[in-house]
Length: 120
Image (cartoon, rainbow, N blue to C red; front, top):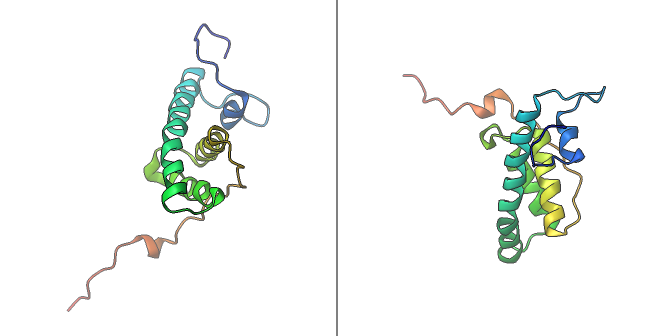
């Protein structure tokens, strides 16, 4: 990412889009845009995580794991690798110890389908 853009994408985020040979798997502009989105999201989640900590009083680890699980859903708009980076960054911003983050297993197809009414 040696172009004239002022945004510095940290190596930790570059790793999300780097293959085993150290090459980017996406165009530099796309990686930069995803980084901006993920960094902004991590920043926005700081207040939410602090509120959860003071209102519900679960552990820091539980809060980070819950946020990670939510970000790992298709509806979140981020990949599992991005979700892991976001929560790791969130932990840094909060100065919390980041737990090991494991993506939730996908639900079996029969659990995702809404119940069907009985046929007469």
